Image (cartoon, rainbow, N blue to C red):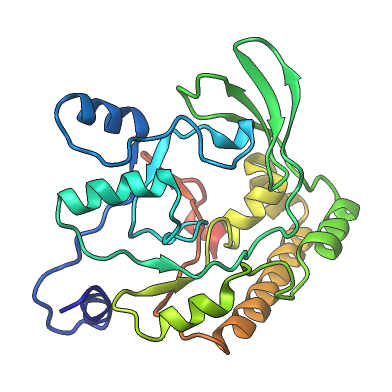
Length: 268
């Protein structure tokens, strides 16, 4: 069985020779250590992603093939090539490929450094989240600001960056990719991070505010999630008229190691 056949059989509860061998990703420092210990890699983990800006370019995770994240996973960049080396070494299955539809804010915000404090700095990323971050990237950044703080900002984000159109959301080589999908032996996925309801709203208003707004301003939360639902349906429908996806990925990120961030009652 090839990777697509195996995936579809697993998802449809049908007989399968074995489960899929996929991996989500690897810490870049771990990969560098493996290399020092003898792992042969054609492409070592780069210090920066080629072509990325300085604040976007630090690599602390080598994305692995097989996860439907917010990147086209058939990307030929060095960071992905490094993951492919490990993928090949362990004999893993052909990866899932993310349809390269930008299903979040388009155009993105300009990523820029707002304050420089020596060993750490404050910057705004492409989805409008302000972060306090270490320059050595040895820990995750602390999020301190979000793009939507009131209804006026929400209306502006909708009008400027969440328009339900494919304009500016597909790559220049989209026609060529459609041709390759016709003969694929791997599953393809529509949907990405942070394209979800709780997760997406959290990216817009922040972790604390989404939880309190459920009680303090439920109408606002409903408006955001209702709009996101219509937005996702619109851009996915336009895309799926051109290509048939094998799976839809809805990103939420609503739990951590000790349990969920929201209660079942709040979820309902």
